[in-house]
Image (cartoon, rainbow, N blue to C red; front, side):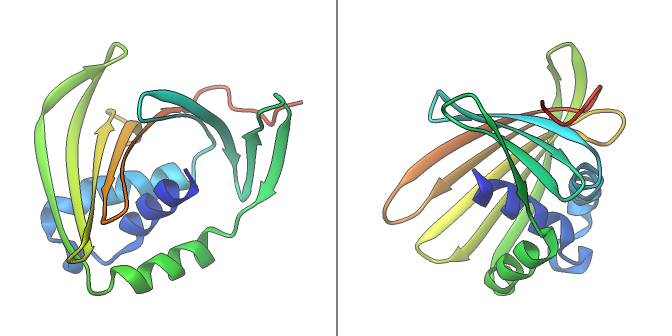
Amino acid sequence: MFKMITTLAVIASLPIAAQGASCKRPIDAMIKAMRTPRHMYFTANGERTGEMIAIGDTHYLLMKDHIWKPLQINTEDDINDVRETLKTARMQCDQLPHENVNGVETDVYVIKIKPRDDDQSTHTLWLNSDNLPVKGITQIEDADRKQRTETIFVYNQIKAPN
């Protein structure tokens, strides 16, 4: 779950020249999302796996015992770690036709990252008119696994949990 968030954050922080002009809007959207308080709902391989509320550098993770655990996450450190991996990655961004997500008209972008020959990740982002992702799907395929994670992003009335 944190790997997906970190990977999307790194995509958002990479220089536009490294990704081509087709990546500008999804990159801008992820940077904006990283700076915007949000509530995220995660599903992996079809099963609900978690929830997180992010406000600034404090992320609240809902634990299995239904208690929210605050975590301090230094996004810049995570971005730098993954950026090193992605320096030699092959990347491609494509825009797909518009789609409706929960009543919201969105623009859809697919970002493919191939850091090594034996693995690949595909990130699909649905962006609203405020240029924020409302949904993201990450598919990871490597020699050891295939995983599909879906994230739903909510931005209104975000508060730290009690």
